Every structure is written in structure tokens, then in C-alpha cells.
Image (cartoon, rainbow, N blue to C red; front, side, top):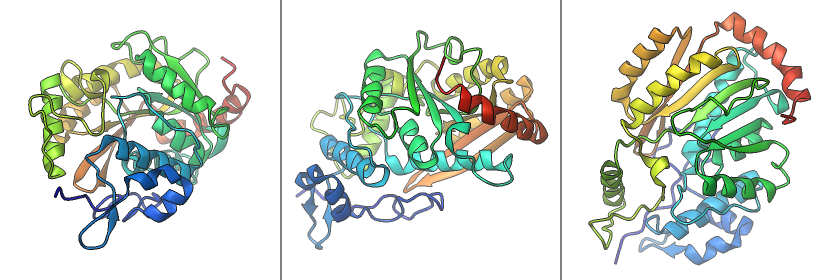
Amino acid sequence: MTRSVLPTASGVSRLHPRNPHQGRYDLHALTVSYPALTQFLRNTPNGDVTIDFADNQAVLCLNAALLAHYYQIKYWQIPPGYLCPPIPGRVDYIHHAADLLAESNQQIIPQGRRVKVLDIGCGANCIYPIIGSRVFGWQFVGTDVDKIAVNSAQMIVQSNPSISKLIKIRLTSSVDDIFTNTIQPSDRFSLTLCNPPFHASQQEAESGSQRKWRNLNKQPKNTQKPHLNFGGQAAELWCEGGESAFLIRMIQQSVAFKSQICWFTSLVSKEKNLPLLKKQLQREGAVQVKVVSMSQGQKTSRLLAWSFMDKIAQAEWAKNQVQHNITSSFQN
């Protein structure tokens, strides 16, 4: 018999203190909010109830249940083969990003439409805009180069009235131009978010999938093409040069928009990339650079944040953008 994975949200929790996904999942509560999850529940030999985390349909249903229970999202579906994100880690990113904004707002997290956020590569799952808009009431613009992903994200937004007026999805035309033709002249963003493709090739992405399977104590039937239980299209998983090349390009291009964005941020999966990225930020004239460590179970990642404004300029900028973002709510 294949061993099931215990229903824990994060193993030994080192999640953000505000993250509600601490410890074990309450599967009973989740099935009350999302009854479809019931079909994937399994009993373990020691009497626990769990799901099989190697079953992509079970993982998808668990995500839908978490979004229904904690964020009142009634419709959440993604096309087959697209990235299914682990929600606790994504929620952590949002809360750490909120702490950045609080630093220039008298240590109070700004909420509501006064905060406008750009999610670079929102994917078919639209997870960051969902969480940020539901937890803090922020406005979001989500972008992606994949038309199927954009259509999926738009369907999720349009199908949930609680977020439909807070999120806009934009199709971008170029993988290489991260901000150009995405940020409009009238846009002002408090934050940018990004979960970059961190593999340098399809082969490297498949090797990463093999490691996931080993962590789950599973072995895919086809060892030549390992099954991705969390899914992911090519643009979501890898790009030429990998994570470091993508983020260096992002840093270089961010200079042109330094007066329109208070904080640029991105996840950094590989710690070894940080020294190179910090040197690039220094070269481009970033005034503030922060690295925040984030952990979810066995996985550790980092939030890299940079700004071309000092703290005084950020406080003034934030004050001036309150009325701007409220009155210009997605009129462009």
C-alpha cells in the first residue's frame, strides 16, 4: 500500500504569524465549505484522515476547498496541466509584502483600493490577486503571456462577485518585456509581485518534479517523463537562463518605472542567486533592498524587494497615491 501524506499545511510551521494555514488542515471544516473534497479523503493506518498529495485532482480539490473556506471563493478551476500553487506559501508572500507597505504607513497595513498591486505572471490560478483582494481589499492587475491562462484567470474573477471589481487581467505580448506595454502611463502601483520560472530548461524542471515525487515517497509510472502533481506549463516552470536571468532582466527593466512603483518584489527560490541579484540592484541604483526568508515545511524561499525611493519618498508617494488609486479604479 502506498503511504499517504499527513494532512499538514506546512509541517513544522514557520509561516507568517498572520497566515491562517498553520499546522494540520482541518479537513472536516473544509468539506463542510466544499463538499466535493469528501471524495478524496483517505484513512491512514494510524487513524488519521488525509488526501493523497500525489493525486493532482485531489490537490486541485484541496485548493478549491481552502479558497472556499478561508476566502469565500465559490468558483476556482484551472485548465489541465497548469500550475496548481500550494496556497499556504502564496499567502505568506502576500502577508510579508503587506509588512513592507506598513513600514511607510506608520506600521499599519494599508487596506482597500488605496493599494494597487501588479502580479507579473498571474497564471491560470490567479492566486495572488485572489488572496490579496480578499484579505486586504487591494486592487490588482494580473498579467500573463499565455492566452489560456489569461482566460482562466478572467473566468475565476468574473465568477466571484467578491473580487470581480478589484481584479483586472491583462494579456501581455512579450515574454522579454516584463513591464513595457503592461504598465500604463497613468498606473501607480504600491507593489509588484512575481513568482518567476526558476528552472533553466525543461530537463531541469523534470528533475525537480522527480525530487517532489521522492519527497512524497512515490514513483511515477513513466520515469522518462515524470508527472507534475502540481502541474505547470513551460512558461511557468522554466526560461532560458533560469531564475537569475529572468530576475536580472526584471531588475534592469524596473528602472524605467521607478517613479510609478513603490516596491518591486519577487520570490527567489535559489539562495545562490541572491549575491548576483544584489549586485545588479546596486548597479541599477536601487535605494532600498530587502530579503525576507520564508519557509513552508521543507521548502525555503526568499522574498526579494527593492525600491528606488527612500523611506521619506515612499511615505510621501503613498500619501499621494491614496486618492489617485481610489478615483482611477480601473478606468484605464
